[in-house]
Image 1: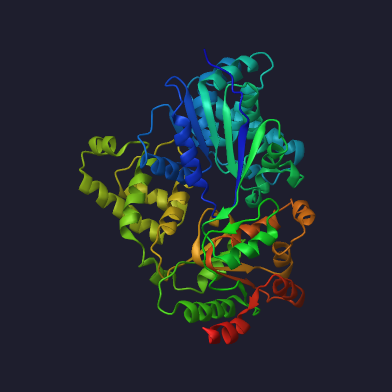
Image 2 (image 1 turned 180 degrees about the vertical axis):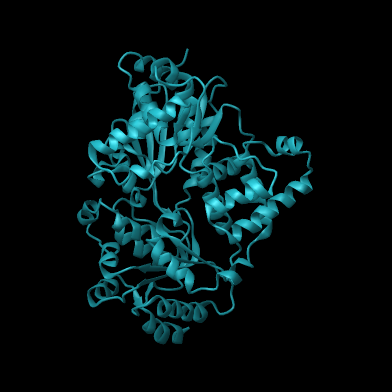
Length: 511
């Protein structure tokens, strides 16, 4: 007899550097103590790299049972909803299905009913060929659990199968996924554990939510009878000055730095122009760090500005400093993902040994460090290796995440990573230079009034600044391509941010 869940579900607000993954691992281990072998514990993540990180860190502490599922939202829906139930409830579902990352970007420029009609026409044609796009997986799952005739039975079966449901990066949950989780919750046999940071919600271009207060995370916070709210307010990443600065923009937490260090204030560079900004930044770096090897991020919101930053740093020399050992290990995992074969099975299939597998991984690693174009990478894999790329994986997504993982696993050296704010999420560096494209964008980043930050929903500009600022461990430097104007300079000074020249002449003289 499976008993109903009587405890409150949990929603945890974990800010940047809050030890979110460590905390989740401990909670998963605690729940395993009373997990029956015929029920499942599910952990949902939003990237393949996050899936691998959680699985790797959990496996270092315990032997992961067969009834523990760790995977992306799409893999979860396929395993627990689409495959077992969609064919029963939805007549148009093909019996033999292939899940694909079919690109629906071509319809993004369309609007209203025209967009919906074209999208349905495309997805229907794909279904007839047995192809289900990743976008469609969520819609199918929602239709299954909310089916008027059989939805209640299906919801109960799913809930009885899943005892614990952990949802990572909960701020990024879209409305349709939220509805699916709500239907599972209402079946009353599953205990749900959500963790994330609403201040790091910067994905509205996908979700099309008109009011920030209506994002699923905040809607869940407003269910006090259903969810117990836990605030994880420690920050293990950043020094005191940085934590104090980003607290000005946090509408949900007041973090405390666990680093008992307050080495440097947050700085700003008043100059305009990318070349001047980078030169000023390097002057700060040299004055503080001398010959010490440190990791650095140059962060901007748009690819166009990121490319300008890349054009002014020595990328070729930087790539020589990559940690080869970590890179080969990452690319071994990459081979497993794109081939959908375990390493042992892969070696048996191609009649190679572990040394030859490492040589292949090294070959791919070297190629990924100098090539970022997906089409070129795919051609290289197809023509220059023995790997058969599986048709049911999102090759672009897996490849992008592998490249980002290679970057994130680099040694703490003089290498500088140029990246967009969106791609910087979850990463950190000793020194971070954040570059706004203009003063209008910078003023949004520096907005401290809660209501105005809430009103900024169209492009999440306010929260993009927060994400960028919170990547820094030791030193945060803020700048603007067109130069920082008087109004923003005043705001920065009121937030205890020090102008670079004053820092160089005053603080460093004291040191």
